[in-house]
Amino acid sequence: MEKNIAVSQRETYAPAQFTEFLWWLSTAEKEILVDSVVDRNRYKIIGMTVLATWAFATFTWAYFFSTIVDSVLLPVALGTFMGFIILTIDRALIKGITKFNKRKPAPLLFRGLLALTIGTFMAQPAVLYMFDKEIQLQISLDNEKKKMLKQLELVALYKTPKEVLVKEKAALKTELDSKYDAVNKARENFIAETDGSGGSGKVGIKDIAIAKRNEYQKLDGAYQALLKQTQPKLDSADAAIKEIEHKIKTEEINFTAYLNNGFLTRVEALGNLLKNNAALQFRYYLIVFILMLIELMPVIAKTMLPSGSYDQKVMLREEMEIEIANSNIRKEQELKELYNQMAFEHDKEAITAFFSLTKQDRTEKMKSFSKKWKEENHQTFDGLWEKMKKEILTKQEN
Image (cartoon, rainbow, N blue to C red; front, side):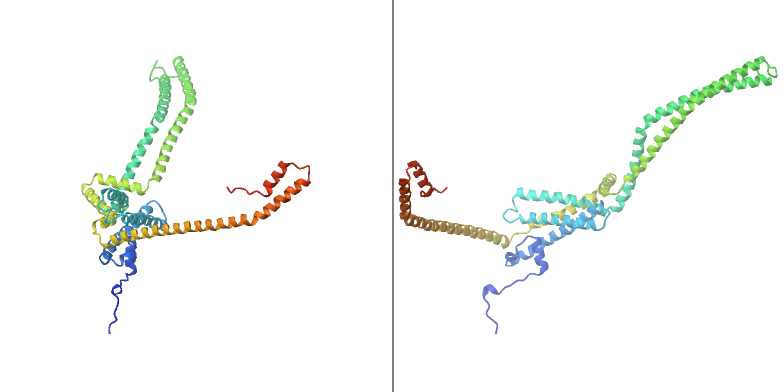
């Protein structure tokens, strides 16, 4: 025969561990939710949305840190840590949503803005991961543009000192060339005079040829002196120009070493990629919107799902606990007041008894002091009074 079971014990529900975990994610109180049959599945759904958001946040943050950290384990650890923070924020957001305030615009707007802010940032690494190949190609193009821009900036930076050196070098060479042309012309005149092809037309060293030779030698000597004086300046100008060119090349090499494919570089490349591709822009904003919904899912689910008996039970249970706490505080206060009253009454009786018992002894002691004062003629009455105050009279309690 079947056993007769009390009505309150006929239905027992033991949730699975995964169900309890989902309830914990949805910030539901297991002890109250067990008895709310309809709300069990609702809070499992909310828990699943929180779990999905948690996993998505962990993945996106891990990928974000992988773009700035070379280690393998560190991005995973940091991503897990940041995912836990996002989980905590999401649980705090949905914990504050109840059927009594889910339709109020102010708290709902605040939670929506907070979730939207987090979702916007979380969507960025996910989009970078999806368009990684296109972004890497754009990064290479952007880096080449940066190199060209850096080269133009360096050329513009050193343009003025380099132009000064080039002009100085050109002026020195012009002066040397002018002197050399004069020497060369004098040399040709001298040769033409000696071979009879020019000048007087006489062959040999004659007076005119000797004069032209002297002029040639004089000009050549002046040219050699000027060359000796000018050559160090030309060498110095060449060295300064080479030094400027070396600085430009060195800074270009150093600038190239700073080029990378970090997070901000990828974000910039994605922005440049979107500028010239209308089809990609549409898909980008669509993906960002979908990824933001992932972060908003817990708040949306908690707001959209209808409220059952669970929220009412929570409110009543909280009111009951508050009332019990107030009642306990009042009872404790009454007990303390009773204790203080009883202690006062008994202490009062003890003090009365103390003074009654010591009354005769105090009188005998005063007689003893009076007798001693009478026998000692040198002691004044004021001295006797001071001694009695010190030895016999009581002091008021502070």
